[in-house]
Length: 68
Image: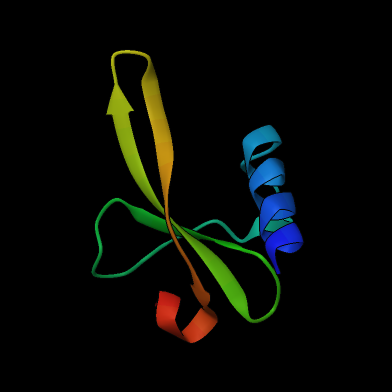
């Protein structure tokens, strides 16, 4: 699982709008988003910003059902 999560994060870093990542906002959690690791797992991200611009913090690696 760690390898797939790492690949998803690399893909997000290089091409955040890649359709395979299914970058989506989490309903009821403003500023939180998910990207797809595989069919069953998602990486939960939180949008932040500072003087250099916007970035995302990795919050969790969780099952699809727990992400939403």
